[in-house]
Every structure is written in structure tokens, then in C-alpha cells.
Length: 148
Image 1: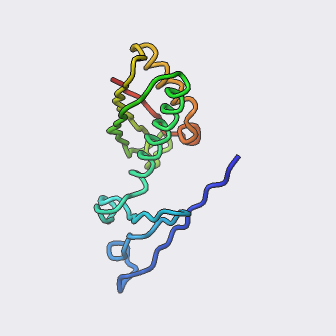
Image 2: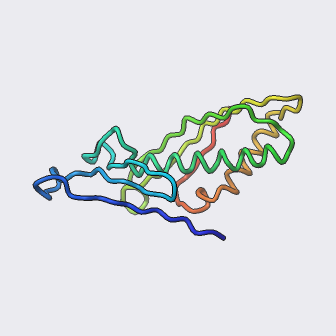
């Protein structure tokens, strides 16, 4: 078991706290990292900063990748490169509330060395990675893995 902490800081920077006018920019502080964040541009945020929906997609992708790397390493495969162009859909859920209802992971994995997984072994590693990913096990969002 472990505890994970984040400190979120926001300060009013505008003259008004009217919905269309107040600033959305804020900072996420972790033990050793700082992330500049905002709302999504569609919700009056700054496109140059990470928004919570993007962070959720990245978190699911990162967790899947880290789980996959651990599994591949333990099976004796050498991963040289892992790229995922993940995407998330913000839509109304079955309760009519806006939610990230679906995240699609599209990992492309390049292996080195003599031992190469076949398609079935690759699919099995992705399936197990999804089942063991801490973040995927923590959300209601449908997570789909489209491996190539």
C-alpha cells in the first residue's frame, strides 16, 4: 500500500469572478514535479496547459505502459520503444452527466533482442496490463486497447 499526494493551487487573477471571466489556470504540485494546468479550452481554459481530462487519458496510458513494461521484462522481452496515441471521449454517461466515458489506448511497441513475442503473446500482455493497471481498476471509464 502507498499514499499519493498532490497539492492543487489556484488564485483569482481576474477582476471578476463571473463564470466567463475568472481564470482557470492553476498548478499541480507533487513531491518533485510541478504541472501547469487549466480547464479544457471548451470550458474557457488555456490550451497551453494540461487539463484534467487530458491528465486522465495520460494517466490511463502511462499506467498501462508501465504495467506492460514490467510484464514484458519479466517474460524476457526487451522493449526498445513504446508509443501510445491515446484519446478520451467526453460525453454524457448513462446518468446524463458529463464524463470521460471512453479512453482508447493505441500502443505501438517495438521489441529488440532475439526473443520476440508473437501476436497472441502481445495481445495477452496488453490484456493482462489492462487488468493489472491500478488506474484502470480505479475508474468507471471504458478503456479499450487497440494494439498493433
